[in-house]
Structures are given as structure tokens and as C-alpha cells.
Image (cartoon, rainbow, N blue to C red):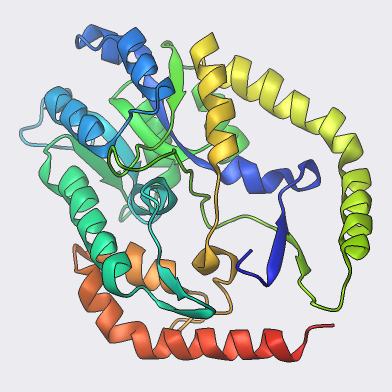
Length: 335
């Protein structure tokens, strides 16, 4: 990856994939509101599922009064539900093929030029989706300290959302809520940025592990073949036992319903991606010790309805110095 790091996302490390962000759908709610599910799945599987189509569908469904309280309240029905502090914004980073860190030749920096402009346009899109469409609900912890994850799961599993953007796996209590619904659940990707984007891509929520082998110009191809063989051997048991049980028997049969969902699930896993800002998040943290570029530039702009461009201008010197220090360290410590 980027000439310095090989990431290994094998079955020995299932937690990489179980944090993949997807779009769940309430099939019954969509059918009741006139959505043709066959047409929706045909669009997805043809590679034509874009932000514009998603936005239009969510806007058409809108928000519906359910709890007898005037205005948009927590008990109403929403076309879209997501967790404000993470998935509502993070799910679109890779899905839109965005670059928080730009690369020019062998140089890296906080997004510049067209990368920064695309980030800004993408941020305006998802802010419009969640804040201006009058159809979406973002959850955050309440004054009573209710967990945002639980509130989002509760909204969706109670049948009060047509779509939710969330990870494949949160906690067993959440999955139990998914299993106990009285409606059919489907799964599709977070949409592409536009028709020009070649393929779907899936983000991974920032609570995962990766196994990595540092690149060395002095290591031969045989070294990497031996490392790969060892890792493959370590993956053997989980490849044959854990992955089939979790993905094939649990996700595809207990959490989603239908052959189309199984095909879409495989498509999403194959599209899961990371970038420089994801892999080196801790190394590039600035300000608050655990907050890297994605949190400070992208997520914070979404949460405050701020500008990505303004965030980049404010933070670029700090983050670029962190990038330079990291790359210098990596060059000095190649074995």
C-alpha cells in the first residue's frame, strides 16, 4: 500500500470486514411506499446505484408522523437513519472514492487541488442528505446517556426507517434486535459518488485491526512469498470454520433476506478499501491525541455542518508535518 505497507485482510482477522459500512433496507417499508425492490436490486447489481438516485429515493419517501407529536421527533418514521458521530459521515469516504490524503509522485499531503474540491462537494452532498432533505435522522447520545448505536438500531428494527447506514456487526444485542424484526431486511452498498465512478467502494468504521508487513527494498520476492505462505497457514482454520459460519450462515441467512442480498454482500466485501489516512490514522493524529485526519477534517465538518475547505486550511500545516515525520521514520527504519 502506497509503496510502504502491505495490508493483510485475511480470515485470521475477521474484525476488519465485520466493521464494513453498508446500507440496510426495510423491504416491507419500501414496498408499502411503492418502491420496486426488483428494480432497486437491478440498479445496484448493474453498478448504477449513485448518490443522486439514493437522495431522490430518500427525499420521495420523506418523514412520516408516527408518535402524535408535532414536528420531526424521535418517534417518527424516517426514510434514512444513521449514527451522527460516525457512520452517517464515515460511510461515504470510500464509497465516494474520496482522498483525504493526496499523493503526487512520492509526496503526500492533506488533500489538495481537485481532491480537496471533491471532498468539499461530497461534504455538501451528505450534509444536504442528512440535514436538508427532511427525510433523514442522525442519532447521537441523549441527555440520559442513551447510546447512539442503540438508538439507531432501535429506530430501524422497530420499523421506523426505510434505510440505515451502519456496520455489518456492532454487538450481539444489536444483532438480536435485527433477528427479531417482523419485516425482511436487505443489504445494498453505500452509493457511488456519481455515474463516472467505476466501481463501488466500502468504508470500514474506525474500530478495526489490520495485520501489516513493512516494505523493504532489501527483501526479495521469496521473503514475501514465505510471509504470505505463513499468513495463509495462520488463516486456514478460520477460513474454513469462522468465515463460512459468520458470513454464509449468519449474515446471509439470519440478518438479510434473499438471493440478491447474498450477491450484494459478496460485492460489498470485495469492494472494501482503505487509504493512507485510514491505515495511519493514529500516526497522523493532531490536537486530540486519538483524532486523525478523517475525524478532524471530514467527520467534524459533518457534525458541525462546517466546511471541509476551511478545515483543510486550518489543519494542513499540522497534518502535513505529521505525514513528513511518518514517512521519514519509515525510510529510516526499513530493514
